[in-house]
Length: 412
Image 1 (spheres, rainbow, N blue to C red):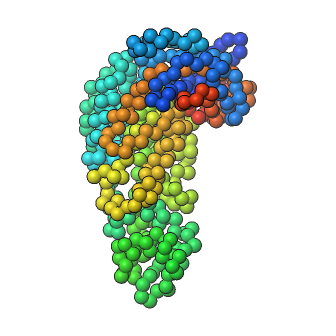
Image 2 (image 1 turned 120 degrees about the vertical axis):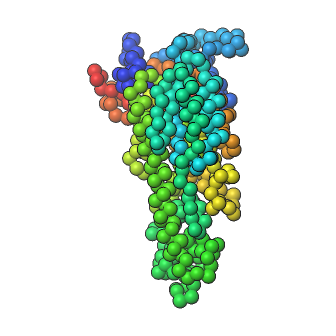
Image 3 (image 1 turned 30 degrees about the vertical axis):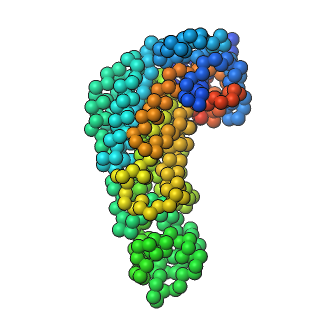
């Protein structure tokens, strides 16, 4: 499910044997998300900063009781099987600021069902942001469920006089780097202004909106541009609230011992797909999020609820073509996809409804994991983040592990 090294996180003791090894925990699942428990050390290929590291041992650990069919298959000879009694630790992280009011209800109902399907020994905590409501993980479920029942969404509605879509706002913010921008013509079109070349009218986002909304108003382009820049600020504030909330959560989790699985429920986080557009994901918080997950010994699964086609979505979505819709879905999901992968999980895309199937997949994938004993090189022990990669040769299997590892200097 991720990476842990005891002297690093002060959560699991470093293995002591003939050689000094670190603990790397991973999940190996089939296409249905079912854990595979028949792999030995030789099946794993582990590299740090692209350099192979020897896997000394592989222990398969069941996190939930073994079902009758699984028990009938027997435990693999090549792996040590254990059944820890303490259960799993889950944190539901609800990005309430990504849902407009009323749009969060189906997802909250699915999250509530997820809580009800946990094993009795599993611990569940809750973090709701940007407000910051926090419930410590425990086996008690009532407070978590009652809090979920009260979450309805708090994202400000994007109100646009010119029905600007998020993708259009992104394009408008990139105008200063666009050589075909209407700005080169003084910000005006129509009678009395410099005629816009065909190429400008075709590729300039402001002029495209003008043709749709106000074709006979000479001053309309500048008003569209100003509105786009103002709405970009609102979009950036929403994205920053998500990043700040996640950073706060991971810092808090770093203080809690043991492995944690974060189930992030989000309506998406808009990030520009243009280098010169806004909002972007180049901030320090966004860049270091995967490393923060490694420090927290936390794996992140994101249940991404696609709100673009939902009835509660903004009226500005009207008339969108399939390419425009696909682009906006990608912009709302790409950063979450990368963050989840960096943190050892995945983004689970939910096109309609509340995502009950996504929560079920999290339960299946987290029902067991491998604890690998990996032999590091001396250069790895510098206390700095290093790129980690874990693979298996067997076809048809997926490995989930965090993509960063931090190994402390010996003796620290």
